[in-house]
Image (tube, rainbow, N blue to C red):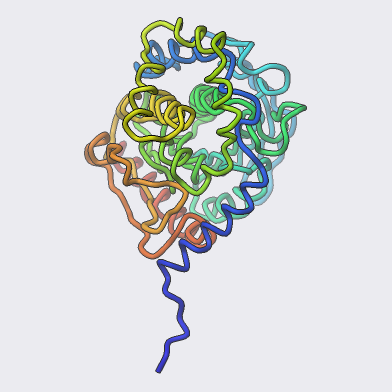
Length: 378
């Protein structure tokens, strides 16, 4: 008798690829690679500060004031809505002009102080609604508070000329990561002053990439739970289902501009252009795609960020049918970079199907990790 149950792995891939066709209508990186000055500053900051777990040294010195615009208590939970000047925007005003540099957040904290998790937004998540509906309320029932922050270039922080989630520059993604490192850890410090802890940070897809970068710079042991992410964003933007949305033709034209290329070549302590040409001769891909591989690895690979203080508190979720986040590109594994991390493979699920059906599992694991931290402090 023929089965009417679909072949789950192929079905999960099909759903991912269907969503990809919709993404192509909204292109990424519609303006440029980024201003050479921004690339130069970001490269130095990544090398000298982020890779050495020094971000919070700057944040503590700046100590931006957190303004609470709304606060109310109901059913044993205190809710906050507030904002503060992003420390990254203070350090680099040209990276985050105007409203981009103001960090907006909401916090939902049990009146009895306890553990707290920051949930970062994934691609296209401009509001708090999805994270609140799918994560916050159920975790509050277990006594776990949540903080939701808006990504730079999203929501109230979206530049006026940007179309939806279509980041204009490749560097916007790198700035987003650097800014969230500072902002998330500042919010951990704020909630600690209110008596809360221990802490976790998590996110799905792009939010997972950002969560692991932010967690890497924590100066305290925390739980880091990247969901549907990988150790580098390089394969996602060059080979994954989102890659057709990247405006590679525009980026290629910029690499053919001798004035722009000369400015990139003058950036110290890098050999991106030579490496790009070697890769292009070897693999036959466009210069733009190879430059994307190089820059994504340089700015997002966990190889170039600190190992979390206690990797046994870290838990990674992967989907074996994921067409957005690819893992077979010769990139390092989590186990290679984060000793003692646990990796949970969601068998038969793709990127989209896992997102639609696995939030209960993710909430449970985050709560378990936070309880384990509490037991360590007893």
